[in-house]
Amino acid sequence: MPDDLDRKIIHALRCAPRVSFRRLGEVLDVSEQTVARRYNALCRSGVLRVVGTGNPAVHGQAEWIARLRCRPDATGPLAGSLARRPEVSYTSVASGGSEIICVIRSPADISRDDLLLRHLPRASAVLDVSLDLVLHTFGTPGTAGWTGREGSLTPDQVLRLTADRPAPEGPVLPAADEDTALLDALAADGRATHTRLAELTGWSKPRVARRLEALEAAGSLTYDVDVLPERFGYEVNATLWLQVGLPRLHRIGEEVGAHAECAFAGAISGRHNLMAVVICRDTPDFYRYLSSRLARVEGINGYEISVRERRLKQSASLIHQGRLVPPATV
Image 1 (tube, rainbow, N blue to C red):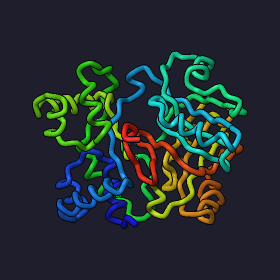
Image 2 (cartoon, rainbow, N blue to C red; image 1 turned 120 degrees about the vertical axis):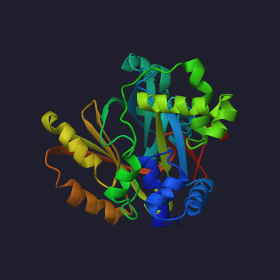
Image 3 (tube, rainbow, N blue to C red; image 1 turned 180 degrees about the vertical axis):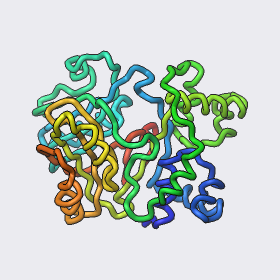
Image 4 (cartoon, one colour; image 1 turned 45 degrees about the horizontal axis):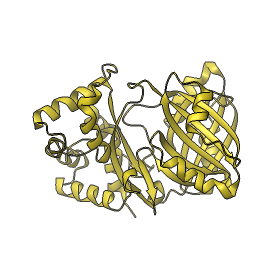
């Protein structure tokens, strides 16, 4: 099982996905070789993947949260089919195998009805569908996401990793023809070296470096750090559908998003206007979170819980035989 140093490496990569092993070793007070060896072992074991992705908002896309209530006998095949679709960035089965939760990226100007017809299956196995637009994601960009409570970095270590990172200057639509090969390479390995990226794109290393810097500064290129929490001993994953008063929505979203248990928090349309994904060690740990930390958040008027049974896709990775793998390999 991964240890505290592995957790620190993952936390650091969430803060600075392309940080050099040398710099990471300095911040963690271990050798560059140790960091590189640990990182490569995590990747080989399918526990960790760092991937570069185009910012969907830059390309005029929106994200939708779909909940499909299905016949249990048909849920698996349907979820597997959705996970293999490129516009679906997350897929899991919850609620005892009767519910599929997925995230769909689609043109922002598409209507809800068109989205249902184009992207969601129309089959007798689907008993009910709800579709909500993601309005806002809470948390600090680049540092949000679950890392586990043990082995996390100190605030000073986070500052050392992020102090030199420029704030995005505002989304600028990248030239698709120019950047396709670069983005494809980063989707396979978000930490590919400049040398490797130059080989894959046919560019010079200085050109690769300049273009990466420009895309990151413009907010056109972001990074996802996919992790399998269960390999760290965190077995319970649940989606919370919260109802909060509109005047308190932003405050509560930021507060819940800052919880160590929270992997994602976002404002959504629909009856439940705040969605949060939380990860805990086991059922008693999850209950402690609900009855203590979440219970202390003032302004939550109602909630619903979907407990994940299994996950099929996480961001840019499929989960295949207990490993994170690129979608193209399955």
